[in-house]
Length: 336
Image (tube, helix red, strand yellow):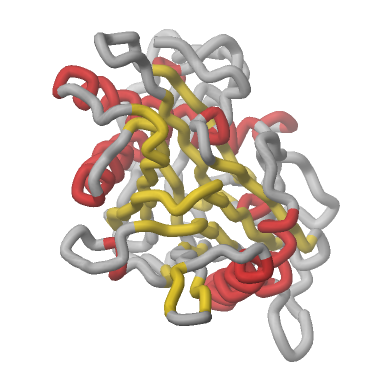
């Protein structure tokens, strides 16, 4: 198993990603655009999620394919990003055909970046609708990580969060290989690093030096009940979340996409301590572009395992790539 050529979710054939940011407000939007409608589902494991159009992704419900997924800052204000993304896609002639109308299907999720040193006095309306529109227009095969898009104002325990991505390839079998990719905006309550070190929890999965190459500390610090969490003095539901997309070019059903999202949540637990808390809105969308044949059972098991490791790597890359801003309330990993 080896990483994809760009180590981005866009190594999965049929996907592009665009970012848009408001640096003054320290918030932003990331939109993943499917070149053609793609099968998708999602799974929530956090206790405080914020999302749009996710019920339609349940395997028992009618709509089977989506046009795009958005990840947005702005807390509940960020739901507006979906309207902006829909408007841009409609202009492109995308969407579910009903008579002479097209309705783009764009589910998404939001994170809380309202207390990060940014100026949230944005006037009558928040900027996220326009940012969603701009992100679709910026979509391409390469995109920035760290403090861009939905990661612009993200925070974790004691550090800036960020936008991360990673990819990997499955081993060849009788029907060929396949690719898996992860895209994640990390704004977790928990700590991506071990104790008070700079060593990432995701270190065992690192490929090359994609997030610093420090490996694990030796000796490992002892476990402690004194968890390092964000805003410990004022913890509140809705102020934290990790929102993500896991994608593959292998052909999956809607139910199998949900199973892939479930497996990818293990990557949260491998990269953040703690994860899936009552105060996080942890959520993963899973997408199949269907460019490759359906996996055999052994390949399906490999795919689920790689969903976890690729997501863990993407989380660490998001933290590693964060860049400083003059109004930051937490430092970046690279400057710590």
